[in-house]
Length: 351
Image (cartoon, rainbow, N blue to C red; front, side, top):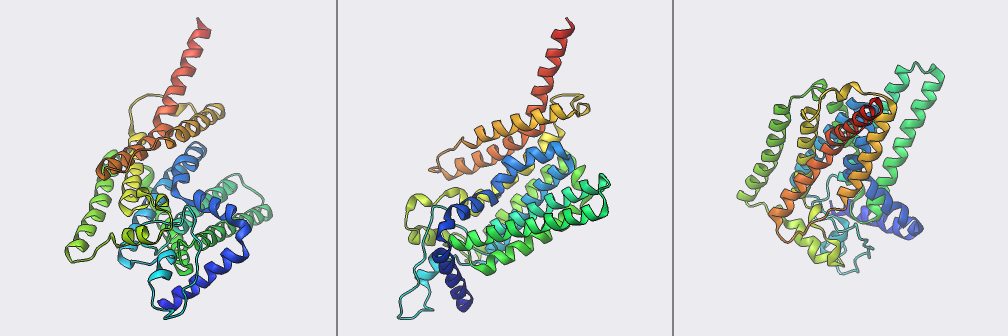
C-alpha cells in the first residue's frame, strides 16, 4: 500500500504545483459535492419538480453515506496529509511537502471518499431523472441521444473535477476517490430500483432509521471491544493538521451518521405529517415555485444556525434535530403555510 500511497502523493503534489491557480475551483467543487448541498439545495427543487426523484435523492444520499461510514471503519484508510509525516516509505530521505487547506483536515478514515461517493450517486439519480422526463415528453430519438450523451458527459466532468479536488486538497488518495465513485454509482443503481421507498410508511422510516443507527453504533462498540480504536484518525488529524481551527467535529463519522439519520427521519415525518389536508391537490406551477423559493431561503437561514462542539452529546443531538427539521421545511411547513396564505387571500377577495 505504501507504493500506491506514494503515487497518490506524487499526483497530489503535481496537481498542487501545476494547477495551483485553480485552488478556488477545487475548493468550490469539494464544498458543493458535500451531501449538505443535496439536503439543503437540491432536494427542495427536485421534490417539487418530481416528488419521486426528491425522495430517491434522500434515500441514495443517506444509504450511500451510511455505507461509506461502515466501509471507512472496515478499510481504515489513511489520508495523504498525515501519511506523508508518519510513513517509513521514504526512509532517511525528506518526505514530500503537501500543502494543506481549510477543508483538508477531515477527521475520519480516508477510504472510500465520501465526497466522490456522494456526488456520483446524486448525479446518477439526477441524470436518470432528466432522461426519464425527456422520454415522457416523447423527445425525438436523435435529440434524446444527444441529450443523453451530453448529460452523462457532464456527470463525468463534474465527478472528475470533484475527484481531482479531493486529491488536490490532500484529503484523499486517487484510489480512494475511484472506489468512492464506483460504490456511489452501485448504491444509486440498487436503491433506485427499490419501488417501496416511494410509499414507505412512517413506521418503516422509523424502523430503518433505528436499524441503521444502532447497527453502526453496535459495529463501532464491537470493534472497540475487540481492541480496534476507531478514533485513531482523530488523533492523527489533531497531530498533523497545521491549523487547529481547520479540525471540525462535524467531519467525524458519528456526526455524519446522526446528520444522515436525522435527514431520513425528517423525510418520513414530512411525507406523513397530517398538518394540513387537501394541499396535495394544489399542483400549479406558481405554487410549486413559491414553495421552492421559500424553502431555499429558509434552509439557508437554518444552515447559519451553528452550535458549540464543547459538549459532544449535545452537539450530536442538535445535529440530528437540525437535519430532521431541514427536511420538514420543504415537505410540510412551507407548503402548509403557503397554502394557508393563499387560501386566506382568496377568502378576502370573495368577501
